Length: 88
Image 1 (cartoon, rainbow, N blue to C red):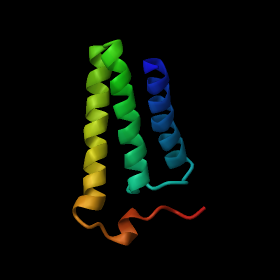
Image 2: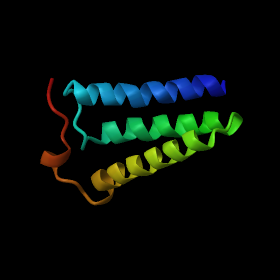
Image 3: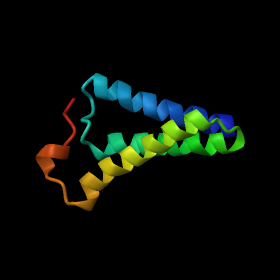
Image 4: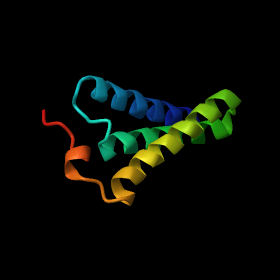
């Protein structure tokens, strides 16, 4: 089960990055930050069972940075033009 959670987490992070590169999601969109936060959290859960210090540090920072993005959107009352996802 931990490996499955880690794989789902990795798929979320890579999928979000792919959508960003294809222009299907904005880097300011809460969905982008949320996918990264959930992905990093799932990878951290999997690392609890098979710990790797380097991976834990990277995913911890990935989670923190994703929370910053979510805070910028939901915590401060973001403007629509800054956070809207591109159509398409």
